Length: 295
Image 1: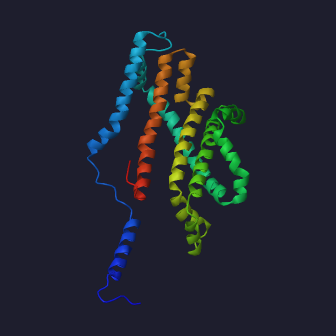
Image 2: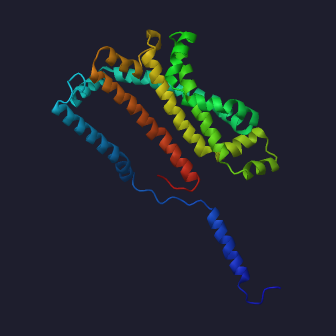
């Protein structure tokens, strides 16, 4: 039956269509607040927490629950850090470890990304390799250090092997988890439009799986950083240079708790810096691209 003259059917249909279009449109985040205010909101809580930790530490030291060689005063650790920074040693330790970790992590991404795509999309590969990837992810990376030293000697190659074996499974598993959550209709649409396997992986699978892939990258970096620290503590040689792990082991060898805590602080500082400067901005970019605002 045709709509009566003056009927509101057509305007209502147009309104419904406009509403559906509005639902498909990503929600734009609210206007950004001033840079200073954002900085205060992001920097003040961790600084306040650090001050609280130091206050508790100072109180425990003043109460003398433990001897000085087990719990030094905060000022003693500060003196150790300050002497290392003024002499330039701290920058050398950080550079030796960070540049090695970043290079190994980039190589791990190159290896783990196609591996994750194969495991996610090829059933026989998933059945054969998938369980081993999960097992390798749960295997402590320090277990690879003796094997790597026997294979390659106390050389940089041993460090990179331990780093790769610690990070590749996490990155690949993160990508597999992200691809598993992609709606099946997306790859089918790409196939109907004539996209080949490489085009599907590049334009459909990787962008759609980006949140899971990014989570895998974060975990892969954490595993690679921990693996490197374990390798630097166990395998020491002039050929390797002195990184943060070797600096930490120096404190153990000298029975100097101030050096141990200073090294732990530098290792933690690198981890926090990578999170705030690299992964946090990437996460915000992905969320904004999906209309989810920013954290």
